[in-house]
Picture 1 (cartoon, helix red, strand yellow):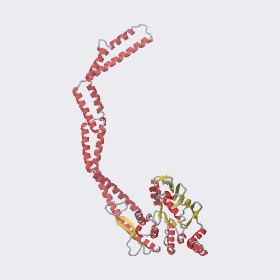
Picture 2: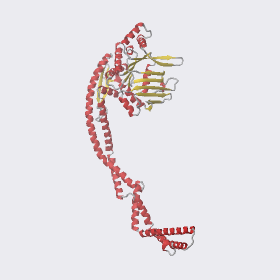
Picture 3: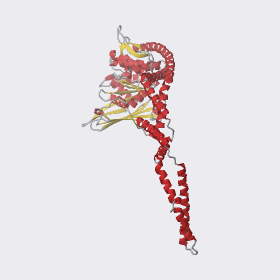
Picture 4: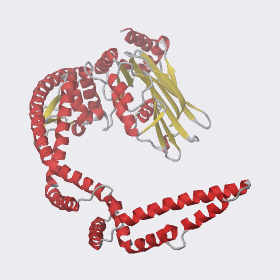
Length: 553
């Protein structure tokens, strides 16, 4: 429910604040006073297109706030939660436009897109005007009205899930099927590459081992000579390190008196002797294990060459070949697995198709029954609105193609005939502004019990009517107000007299500016305003009495 609207620097309105109640709110005033400013501002808060020309002269920006009570609107609450925009049961929409042409939108203080404003706004309020963009002219709204009237909201949601599941599976199947020849060629190449790497049989760590062995084998003669020479210098030569160290140690050992420096020197020489003997042992072990093997060297070099060539072919480092093999095998497995996926998708399509067929047939049958009933009820309502020659036809037009559609097997189109013998045509083509408003009113009255939208706004719904018909319109709007919330801009006293809340719009002019102001009327003020609407410029005792009588009913 719309709770509050604040308008700042919008057209000729400097600062307007209005609290809204449940029931029926009527907005009246002289022509040109700015009655539609409130509705235009509300439209901006709900995502309508902005224009810098809407900003009040002399100001840099216009700012509009609209707050709604969503405590009983589960769909809107859920949408806000899903988009991380929910705060509490009061939802605040804000729209700001600047002189430079920039527009900003907010939901509960958080930046939002215009599309988000529109999507949320469609759950909160429905504005009916004489303009072609009103919701009744939209095919989606016509379908929604019929489905809600028939109590088919859950059925249509289930069918939508099935149809979207079918479309997703079909898209995936088409992708796999269309790429099949390409995938087969790729699988053939992958198979060859995996086989090549399998034949190479490169083991983890093998490359570094081979590289070390190759270096050792390639330098075998040099290593042999160096090792033998080192052993000779350490212990086997005529003059070797071991014998020299032994002689030095004996010389110091024969001294009777040694100071600390000589003792330390003797210990160091003994340690050096131990180190030389251990080094000699290592050199002898190396010499024993050293093998000069040209055949092994040739094999190792050929093996390394095969590894390097394969790595260059794939443009990677040689040590990455095992990882490449695993990756190629995974790609090959994925392609080979697509056959089983295709079979699974075909089974899914069959199951989705069967479920959709049953659900769509059930939906079509119930829609047809509901359309017949709704046509009759709206027709009776149109007679009360002085449109006895007008008839509504709800056409269920079969969709082309056999693919499951999220909205069922048929499009819903509201067609109207305003004269006897005239073939029904689309609302936008045949109905005038006033006729469209009354047709919309008749439909809303019938569907109000099932509609999920809590607030209905009618902008001059009574254009072109008067007298008894205007009173009927007023009664209908009052009836709608009992079920939710109705806001109506009107020129008809018969309509205004039915309002639970009455707001009078006036224009105040000064030497340099003009502005709009709002006044919420009390009982006495209501009598004066209704009398003005009845009697024109001069208000008489008779017009006041008539106004008082109208307000008493």
